[in-house]
Image (cartoon, rainbow, N blue to C red; front, side, top):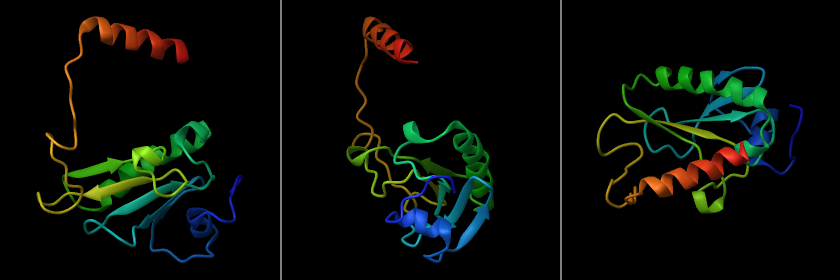
Length: 141
């Protein structure tokens, strides 16, 4: 691991100082079962590089982690699943190390439970507002 934080729970899992149930591993990524799963097969996929958010993560780690997420999702055996990745405390990030949750969804009552009316607060956007947002985003790329 080229960058590590000795106090980070996930860095300790990568180093092996904290045991885990490893599902899959590459040079840049590690997948292990979540110890507080919301469904059977709930897996964490992390880079072996300490970065708090994906903005801090080198591209080679991002390029590696996508195929690992796919392999893990398929390995759960579930035909439906959520892939969740949060950046920042207000976005519900609880561990300050980039991680992707692969959460199998085998029924409406297991896995990630979302309510479109409560958990997904949609609003109507006018074309002018979308165009202005697009221009701001393009300027930042």
